Image (cartoon, rainbow, N blue to C red; front, side, top):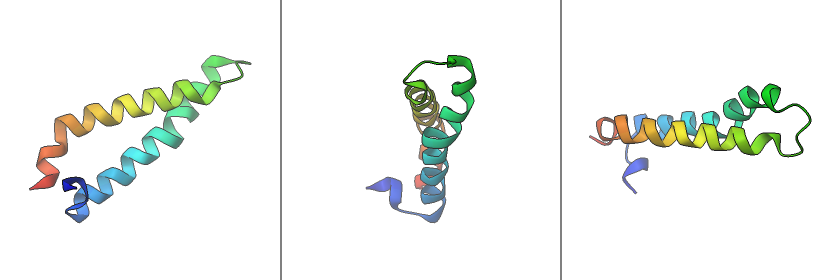
Length: 63
């Protein structure tokens, strides 16, 4: 599990978790109005951004 090998990569994982589970749903809820599953779109948005950031900057954190 190379993503838990250093303190900087652990901090990145905490940031990605915050992005996926808190910030993404917070940003998408106003756009979905009365839809019963408002958070799902936020989870998807946050997860997608997290994966793209990990693919772009993850190798720098593992060193």
